[in-house]
Image (tube, rainbow, N blue to C red):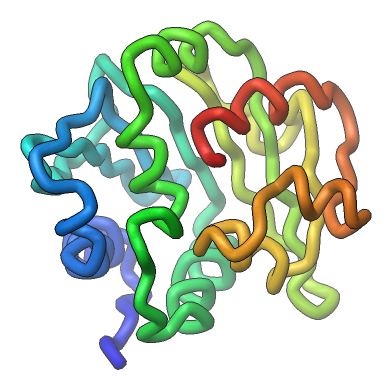
Length: 195
C-alpha cells in the first residue's frame, strides 16, 4: 500500500495524481470542461483538470472552476488522509471514480448548470464521535464552511462509500444514512456532478 502523505500539498499534487493512474485507461482522451479546486483553509488550494486523459494539478484557483471542495486544516487528515487509508489499494473502476475525478468528466451543459447553482453544501461527517466538515461550493462563489446553505450529516464509512462509488447519496438518504438539514435543492442539483 502506498503511504498517504499528511501534507495537503503532497496529497493533492503527488498522491491524488498517483491514484489517478489506476483510472486513466477509462478516461483516455478526455478533457474537462473546467477545473476543480481543493482548498485547505489557510494552507493552500490546488486546481485539477483533465487534459487529453492526463490529470493536471496547479496551485491556486482557476477562473473556470466547476466546483470547490473546502475544509479546515483540522479536518484534512480525518477526511482526506484517513479516507485514502480506508480505501487502501482497492482497485477503482472508472465508474467508481473518486468524486474529484467524476466532477472533471461532466459535459459542458452540466458544467453550466452547476456553475449557476447558488449555495454551499457541507458534509458533516461523524467519525466515531468526532465531527469533521467538508464544504462543496459550485463555481467561484466564496465557500461558506461555517454557515452552509445545506448540511448533509452522515457517518464516516457511508461518506467513504460515496467517495468510491459503492453508494450514491440518494441511496444513502433514502436509507436514512444521510440527514439533510437546510436547502435540499442544492445537493439535488449538484448530484448531477457526483452520480
